[in-house]
Image 1: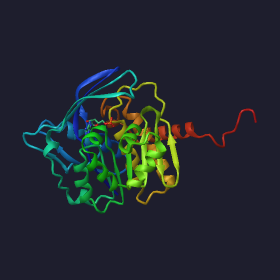
Image 2: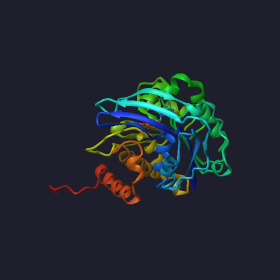
Image 3: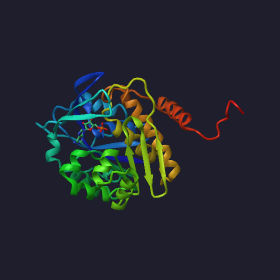
Image 4: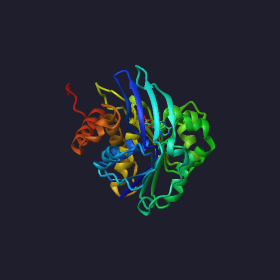
Length: 309
Ligand code: AMP
């Protein structure tokens, strides 16, 4: 099984009430790949600049991520994002976005990336997402993430990209913005009318909700006492979700989608405990499975023996 992902591969400058970093490894495809690497073979696709060095590649390669389709552009500058979070970490502000080498990027995927079983179009300009989608015709499962910037500046391209995937994974506010529907259930239905069979609404620390033609499922965020940097939580969620599904090696049913929601929730929770990729880069599969069991126990409400009985 293998999973191809296109999206930003970046340097981030981030300030939260609990600390700051002036320059750290980031990007939607980076966070996604690290999370998915615990379940399957991952191939991120995208350009980086000359500033992206051996240390950055090493973080990915240490997790077995296949970096052959990360193109290092001579003289180029990597995607750069600067943002900060309020005391309520659910409120994020973008202070600067520099596309760098992504401005000129024309995806040409290797045979290995093109023949992936699963494809994730992580957050990046939607025309690039579509170019990659067109090259990965054999993917049995595909997903897409986006953000307010692209809804505002490239709406038509984004709607066309959404129509070409099985599952949309975006923040609840972005689903409302994309569809013009304030009610989330109606907004999810409007997205499904565009093409996708499933919609995941990410809700920050409150968790994530899954809408499909067959029903609804939701999980809370894993309760944590120490959250330092929420950057990449959504991408880590998607990496856990699609990584688990790809690793299964069969078409997922409703039950597998719910398990995948659990793995997404767990990966996102580890990601926010430290800045950038710091925590997930040294995570183990045992830690993931342990937290998955804790989440399962926490969210079970049927069949528990009551102390009064
Ligand atoms: P998340 O916190 O999951 O929404 O993702 C944060 C990551 O997305 C950061 O590491 C950024 O480098 C990246 N990012 C921020 N803005 C954009 C953008 N406009 N397009 C693509 N990636 C972005």
